[in-house]
Length: 100
Image 1 (cartoon, rainbow, N blue to C red):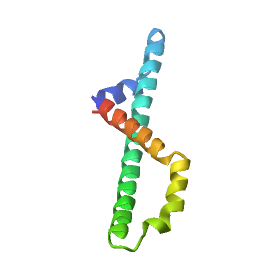
Image 2 (image 1 turned 60 degrees about the vertical axis):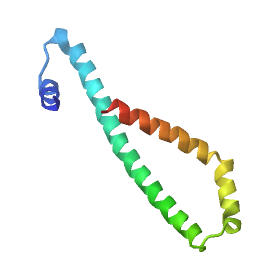
Image 3 (image 1 turned 120 degrees about the horizontal axis):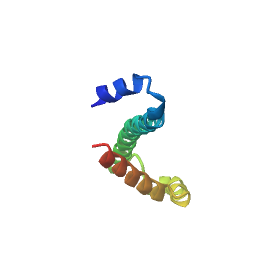
Image 4 (image 1 turned 120 degrees about the vertical axis):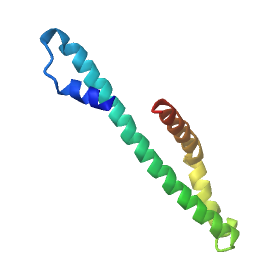
């Protein structure tokens, strides 16, 4: 399918089809952007997972204590980090569903 679209986009359209070819080029551009965004979101999710795994281990093994980290955690909550993460997760899920 990609090959056909790329081939079509490489053609010089006749004047009365130029608008349709422009629409196809725009749609294809959006698809490419979504795929790049999806890859970037996967890398971000992987990085967050690594960070959370390390933090969880540090808490479990007693190297981080709740009392020592209450101010940074409160700061994250005040800036709405948890809410933003939920919104981001919903966006990631929507992007993944639409690109399957």
